[in-house]
Image (cartoon, rainbow, N blue to C red; front, side):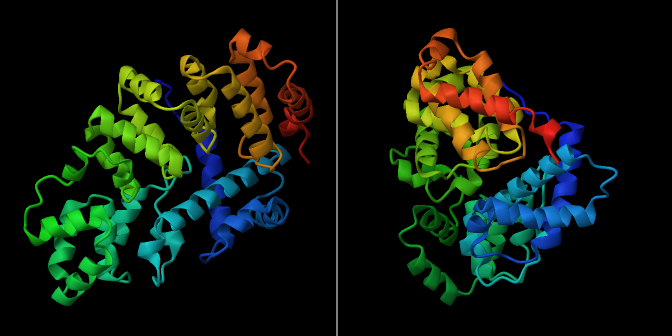
Length: 352
């Protein structure tokens, strides 16, 4: 798998506009942010109102506005996922997220740079900043924060995190002044759940893992939904083609489909078809149906406009091996393909 993601200037420009719109109405943390994003009608009403206020109608076509509204929703979901992943650290913190969050130009939160800001933000309790430094494998920050944590708080943390292997490892090593290798705990692990506390720092340690540990890490993360789609892409980008093939070979068919599905998340859809095309050897016939079903029923029917998903489904079908297509021509999914591509492929031209 050697598909490379290169954001277009158009994408970067639309993300810039979408972030401005998002900041205009996402002033605070919503506890029910996921539910709000799922309710597409009310959500798009709010986004459309912001677009009408911020974007001159003469400069942006209806099609561009529609796609920008979809990108706003994708960025908001990215924000919601980030909040969820960092909930333990952010509890009680009074933060202006429009100033704290660092975004890549292509619409993904730069978690490493954002975490570096947070571990130095004294508005956040020092114990929570220490936990964040450990989860991101910021050794220097972890050392500095540990020195400044009171003995009483260290004792409290030892009891609080005694059941978490990652935090127990960090605190024991720092207490004994024996921190030589921050990923030592992964070297000989045979337990997939040992990775469950450590996905925030995935990009730091994944390349350093042995092949078996990489498989365990990826397998557990896919099963539990812990892996961020862009982190997965960047981890794969650091591996050789043979290493990626070895990983995919070890995964079950359902988890291989899950890998493909992650490339349907913004902004990786532009390489989705290429990724699948390079992976047919690992994808059984029924998995093509699963991918089409996800596109139609989780994207098109749920009014995701960040890209034209019906067009994407058409491109996926066209690149699929002939035996795969033959096996589906009498399946209802083929009827869906015809219906959705006829009705929705040209939405960018028919938007109003």
